[in-house]
Length: 407
Image 1 (cartoon, rainbow, N blue to C red):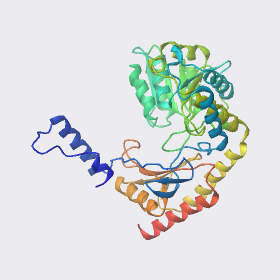
Image 2: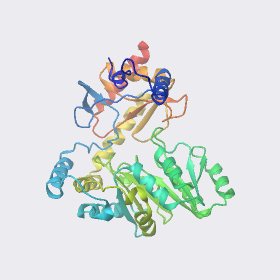
Image 3: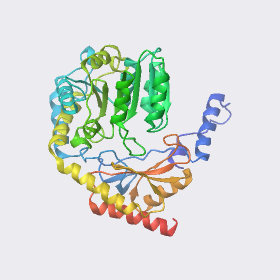
Image 4: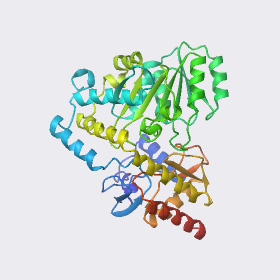
C-alpha cells in the first residue's frame, strides 16, 4: 500500500460513514483523478544539491537554498552556538518577553542592509507567509484597496483577504491596467502589492514603474522579495537591483531561502514598522522564532554581504542551464533568476517527466494548478550556488534523453 493510500483508512466494518468524511474522500479522489494530488517526500539528509529521500540518493533541483547556506559549516556552527547561549525556544511573543538580543541585532542589521527608505526599521517574523498576512492586515482595512498582480504568491492574496480591504487584481505585469484601476479607485488608502521575483515564473516585477504609480496615486508599494533577497543587487535584493528606495516601499524578505535558515522580515519607514508592531495580529499573538535562529542568521547575513563568489557561481549556473535548455522541447520561460521553469502544460505529462527524472536519480518537482494557472503545469528547476557545472550537465543530459526516448 502506498503512503498516500495509508493516509486514508477505510471505516471500520459495520459503521456508518459521516457525510463530512464522504465529502472529503470525494474531494481527495477528484484531486487524484485530475493529477493534482500532492505527496510529501521524506528528506533523510540536510538540504543541498545531493540529498537522500525515501531511501534514495538523488541530485536535487528542488530547493530554494540559492546560495547553499542551509548546511554551510559556519551557519551550522552559529546555530549550535546560538542554542548553547540562548536556548532552543523564545518562550513568548516578541511583545511579551520573547524579543531577545539576537532578534534586535538582526532587525537592525537587515534594515541597514536592505535600506528600502531613509532611516528604515525592520521587524522579524517566523515565516514569509506570516509576514505578508501581518503587514497587509495592519496597513489596510475595509475602506482601503489592495492592487495585486495576478501571479502574486498566495500569501499576498491571503493577507489582502485577512485585511478585509477590496482586492483588485491586474494582469501579470500590466502597469497600464494597474494605472487605470488606481485612477478609478475611491479607496481611502491604496496599496500596490507584488512579488519582486515571481516564484513560479522566475521573472522580475517592473518595480520602477510600480513605484512611479505609487507616487502618482499616493499609494504604498508592498514588495515581496522572497526570491530576490540574498541573490540580486549584490545580495541586498530586488530594490538594490533596480536602484530604488522610497518611504512608500514596504519590503518583505524571507530568511529560509537564500539566507538558508528560517523566518522573514519587513523593512520600511519607521511609522510603517511601528504600525505593524502595534496592530498586526499575526505578529502580536505569535510566539517569537527561536533566538538561536537569529544568531545563525547574523552569520548568514555576513556571508551574503561578503562572499560574492557564491552569487557569481549561481549566476554562472543559471547561464549554463539556459544555454542548454533552449534546445529542449519544453517551453523555457524568460527567467534570469535561479527559478528556471520548463512548461509542460498537461498535469499528467508534468508528473511523468518528473518521475522519469526521478528514475534517473534526479529530483525536480512537478508544479501544477492551483499553484500555476491551468494548462501551464511545469517542472520548476531551482538552481543553487552549491550545484557544480557537472550537475547542470547531468540534468540537461537526462532531459535530452527523456525527450529523445519519450520516457
